[in-house]
Every structure is written in structure tokens, then in C-alpha cells.
Amino acid sequence: MPVTTATTITEVFEGLQRQLAGNNLSLGPICTRVMLRTGVNLKDPRYDQNTDAALVAKVLAALADMGHAL
Amino acid sequence: MTTLLSTLTAASAHATGPVADAVPALTRDLLAGLAGRSAGAVVWFASSAYAPGDLAAPIAQAFPGVPVLGCSTAGEFTQGGTGTGGVSAVALPEGVVVRAAAALGDLSADVATGTDAAVADLEARLGAPLRSLDPARHLLLVLIDGMHGVEELVNERLGNAAPALDVVGGSAGDDLAFASTWVAVGDRVSDHGVALLLLETGVPFRVVKTCSFVPAGRVLRITKADVPNRVVLELDGRPAVEAYADAVGCAPDEVDAAQFMAHPVGLMMDGQAWIRSPRAVVEGGGLAFYAQILEGMDVELMNATDMVAETRSAVTAAVADLGGTSGGAVMFNCILRRLQMDAEGTGGRFVESFGGIPLAGFHTYGETWLGHVNQTLTGVVFG
Image 1 (cartoon, rainbow over the protein chains, first blue to last red):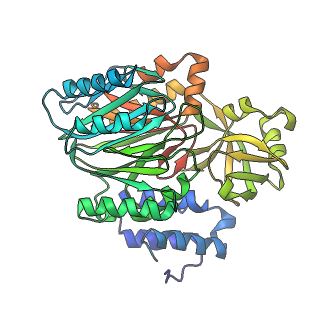
Image 2 (spheres, rainbow over the protein chains, first blue to last red; image 1 turned 135 degrees about the vertical axis):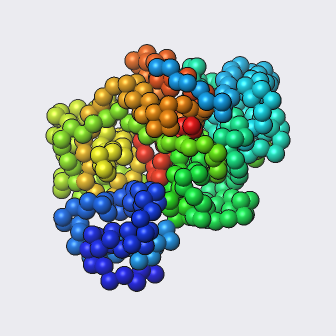
Image 3 (cartoon, rainbow over the protein chains, first blue to last red; image 1 turned 45 degrees about the vertical axis):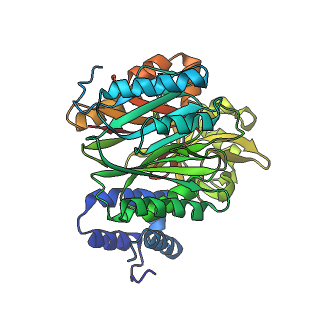
């Protein structure tokens, strides 16, 4: 269950980075999986996607499914 | 290109002809290539012309106690050649493989449940959850049924279980009959399944993903889609075929297989294209694809480049990244790429692009690296 207060994709990405604590070997595959599942590039979100509440929720859900609830 | 082979060299083999001749020849050549070393894992790919039961059991019996994975194909290849109607295989020696475990999932009742069960089986064999494994030393090979359009869900479930691991593989084929495919683990075979092979490697490895397409500079947004059926109904708010035809530069009634082959679309991330290949115009002006594309996604129209040159470049880069040597590889090449090679007569140059690395591969009904992708070569090269 996501518990984050993130309201933008950028904040979600920052939260994921904090959770992974610099583990770049994990960050890449997780970002790719999120992109393929949601169409959102966590590292470089489209302007219109960044504040889309429904999309933020979808990305948080995808991360939670992968065991990375923020 | 010549590649210096490491001392941890895999054994590859290819055989054709009646199963009574092909299987003994295949296993004999693999064992000869191992030259007394033990195999850590064996992967084989066979024409659907063979009965799977005639292959799976005898190949597994030739390597007692070793995880053995296989599937049906739309063509097989090794570093020495590509063809159809035969069987290719690679035996990864102990040393390259420190530990391996395989599991077979039945997807016929429920894809998610079947995939999860295979993961649970794998984790029980390993005695550890996949998510706890070091992604620098572990990877997951996956062979997926190629006829039921379930690759996205299988990959999603694998990603949930092992989000940080490289998951590499392909969808089984059936020599373009499009009737039934099968995957095998040991002597067990499923015609609606998923086969998993977890490898802990004793050497570094690199994933290869190359698609020989570049963005044409035309971005299309998916504005309406029937996602489960892999159909894009609208692009940029217009019937998909009209927008696609405009982007390609032809009339909607001129959109055909040749356009699809030369101009798939790519979901771009960090400069890499995740290719989605159109396969047909559907009623109402939609486009059916070989992979799902979600509403809201932006995709680039792609232009074809030189497939062989791109393959060589990708393999060379992977080997260079491993320090200039490779002891073996497993490759998964899209059937659309094979058909293009057949038309262009470049099959020989394609396998030469692997630089002599001992490998086995097959021409697939879909490729996997972290997710499902089309018109791509994926694979793993071992240092």
C-alpha cells in the first residue's frame, strides 16, 4: 500500500532513489519496468505526466507491486 | 570480427534430421565440447516439427542433475549457422554457472497464478526469494508460450518477484504455423506454459538488446487502445491507420506488411527503443500490434537501419564491456528479423556477427528483456 505524499512523478522518483540508497544496479531495471507498464519515464517524465494524479497513483501502484511501496 | 574465447567456454551444437539421429548427435557434440567438464545448465531450441517428448527426455537424461530448458522455435541458430527444422543447444559449463535452478509454469488456467507458481517453485529450489539475489551475479532466462499473447502479464509477474534482475528470453515459435508452441524443463513439456532458468554466474555477463531501428522524428501519441488485445484504435486522436499512414508517408490503403516491417513504432527510454510492431489493420481503422501499447504513451515512428551491422555492433560492445572475451551466449531473435534475413540473404552474416562466441539461439514469436518487445534481438553474453 503506497504511503507516500508524493504528488508528482519527480517526487516519486526521488522517493525511489532514497529507498534504493544509490543502488543503481536496481534502479535501471525498475525504471524500465515502470516505463513499460505505465508509459512514464521516471527519470525524465513528460511535462503533462508529471502532475497527473491518476498517473502518479498508477506509478506508485506499479512500484508497490514490485515491492517498492513509497 | 574475431573474439578471444575465455577458458570458461560453453559448448554449442546444432543438429538436423530425424529425431533418432538429431538428439544423439546434439548431445554427443555438447558433451564433446565440454571435454569432460560438467555442465551447469543446458538450453536447447528445436523445430516444432519434432515431437517435444522425443527431445526433452533424452536431452535431459544426457545431463543428469543439470537444469535443462528448451522450447519450440521458428528457426534455430548457433554461431555457425542459422536454419529451420533442426535443434540448437548450448551447455554452459560449471564456472560460468555457479548455481542454477529451473521451473515450469502452467499458464492454461490463469497466467498470473501459473507464473507465480513457477517463481515459487524456483525460489523453493534456491532456498531464497528472487528479489534477494544480487543482480550483478544472477539473471533469469525465460521461455514463454508464443501463441496466447500473455508475455506482458508473465513479465509483469516476474518483475514483481524479481524487479532488479535481468529477465531475458523469448516466446516459443512453431515454424510459422501459428497453431501451438511448447516449452520444456527437464523432461516436462507444456504447450501453454512458461519455463524459467535462474542462473547464478561465476563470470560477469551483459545483456544484449538490439533492434536496428532509429527514430524517424515523428512522435505519435496513443489516444485510444484496446490494450488486452494489443490493438491501437487511435493515434493523435485519429484512426490509427490514418495517422500511421501520414507518418510513414503513404495513403491509408497503402499500409501493408512491408510498411509494418520497415516502420514499427518505438517506446523510447534513455535513447533506447522498445519496439512495438504493427501486424494488421483492423476494422474501424485500428492497428493490431504484436505487443501492448497503453493509452497516453508516446511512440516514435522508426526507420530501419542495417540489421547485421547493428547486431555486430551490439555484440561487440557487450564483449568489449566484458573485457574483450566471451565464453558463451544465449540469443533470442525475432521471427520478423529472420524473415528479413531470409529475404535479404543475410543469415550467414547475421551469425558471423556473433564473432564465433559459442551460443545457441532461436527465432522467436517475441523477445523479452525486462518486458515484452518485438523485432529485436535480446540475449545474454557471458564473460
